[in-house]
Picture 1 (cartoon, rainbow, N blue to C red):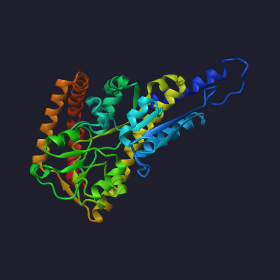
Picture 2: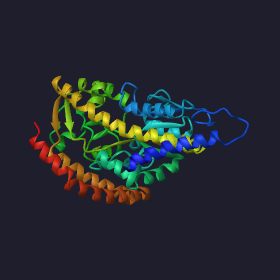
Picture 3: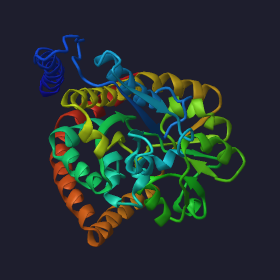
Picture 4: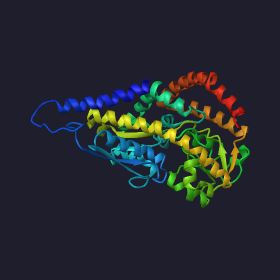
Length: 369
């Protein structure tokens, strides 16, 4: 109900602003549905190759909807990773004013502030629905926006891939010993955990993963899930496809906006941008859920071998995650502030999930054919 009301109020606010501007008097009597609001042309840098239509589609959704809702007076052009800046430098481009806005994953920038990991996803953390609940109604977005304000940026959730897969490996990984020295592409705090387990962690943008895996520069890689992974051709470079993706149970993607550029926007345009980001956030998750099942079947039919992480690896990873959280909280005040708030919310939402949704999911997994 709150989400629907938010959308209705946003649309009403934009329409009202236009009407007020158009009826405000003066000598200029020419008006459109957006009144006398300015014509703006923005650029959006993204972290994604254009070939990945679902994740890059999140950026396109924002741009298209902003144009639609302003009758083309406010347009944003999305650029694929590498066209303006590399995929892992979007934050820098937005902060420096190279572009007005960007579409990226905040955990790419934990070197700037480790608490940015919570904006995307952390190991053994929140599901996509729980992440949305935390961001929209649990104080999460306010906490993350406080961090981004230090970079002269404001952020909005603008996509979610759902629980990701556990990555592609050239050989089977049966124990902790098999992880030692393995070269793996994996970002965020999940990468930090893998590093503590002996993995040689690499951070590469999506458009570089296939060649690195195929040519042996890395031994393993994680990206998103079956639909995107199939498009990248990762199944042609590695045979074993692991689950679960314990490091990203519900990763949110963010629209970043340069704060000075944001402050110059008319209020109506700000509300329209926020509405477009909200739509992108909800739509991307729905689309991935609709596409991943079919893609996974095609991968398995073509020779991909599904594998599950051993209990030894999962237990060790969970233990290392807790230790990493505590270590970061002890060293970084902003991480501690977000972590404690997030942890309290997680405990509450997990209790509700276990009482209701988990029990139904467990029963259905045993009875569904």
